[in-house]
Picture (cartoon, rainbow, N blue to C red):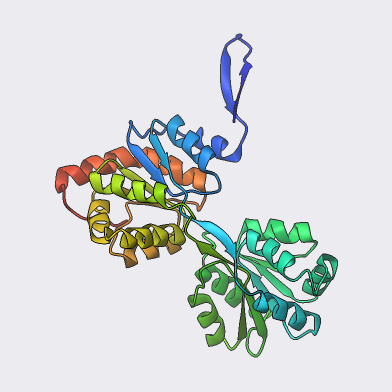
Length: 317
């Protein structure tokens, strides 16, 4: 939230106290009153406030719900194999996945023992969130993956360190994050690794689909001018719900007239795979930067889209 204080001249000014707000005040940006749809679940209130502070009319609708997998067999097998020293390298892809794994294997492997076993193998973390979760667990990280933290960067880091951490013949466990990403296991196997997936939770649409259904109708009516997409699963669920409404084609057509802002390459790939263009791909995969850069560029891009062809497709970066 914003706090207020007096400067030396006695004037009251606001100063940011969160990372997102500090990011957003770095540069001026304004949505100019555009309706901005964010498919955010965890940080809905914060994102709505940021959009409003940047001159937008926020429409924040949850699109994702985390649920445990029906069976924890993969996680339990992972714990057993790790304890038996049958795993050489573990790749953690999400912070919440680290925490879910600790909980899932608790019946066969205590938290302290899990940390002890992990500290005996090579641990790769895909970005700051799994790094933080692993450190909280007491696990040292052997290799960290730089932005934009996709499977490509994971493989690139491993290639760069292949002398110290070779993959050929090594047994590699990959903690997956809700929706399986086949490119990473495929790339590891091409490098000679023996890969085991460890999926301890998955994504599902919200239990109450009404807000998402209403948002789809708003897009189709033309009431939404900017769409913020922070993960590929958000857009999958949007179209899944639209298909259940028999509105998938109408949604696809309507989105061609909306400014679409993507948080990063994987999300952009999902959008393009559905026949949508990406008007803005943010420079760093952070939600605050996504909102900021959409505010900086959105109004101008929308004017260009409307001026060139009111029914045309999205521009490509």
